[in-house]
Amino acid sequence: MIVRWETDHDYVLVHIHQDMFGDWIFSRAWGQIGTQFGGLKHQLAESREQARMWLDDESTIQSSRGFRKVLDVDDDSPEGQEAMRQLSLLDAL
Image 1 (tube, rainbow, N blue to C red):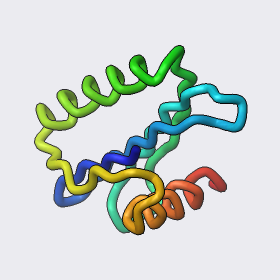
Image 2: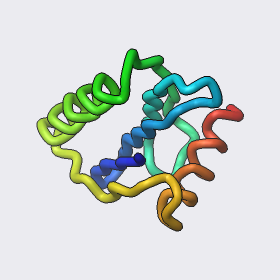
Image 3: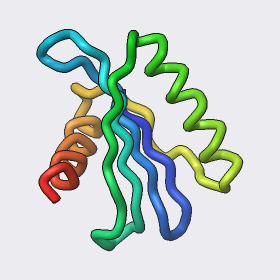
Image 4: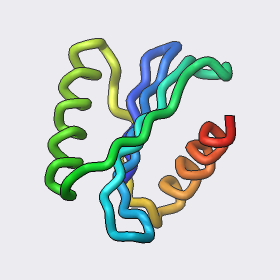
């Protein structure tokens, strides 16, 4: 699952997925649109439910900051694949 929020200048992207060991990973990328400023953080969740709870919390936080949700897709959709490509570029920094 990939969810992205934006303002006119900033973005936050969350990716929830399982790794090759079956662990649930909550990845969060953030930054300024059109720049390389930002960051990336990965957290190991105890379960998919915990990762979804973190996503709900993130949604509440971003809404309160004036961000609007612009993407909410599964990993295997075309939009999800493009978001994954962008996330992997950040991971290399």
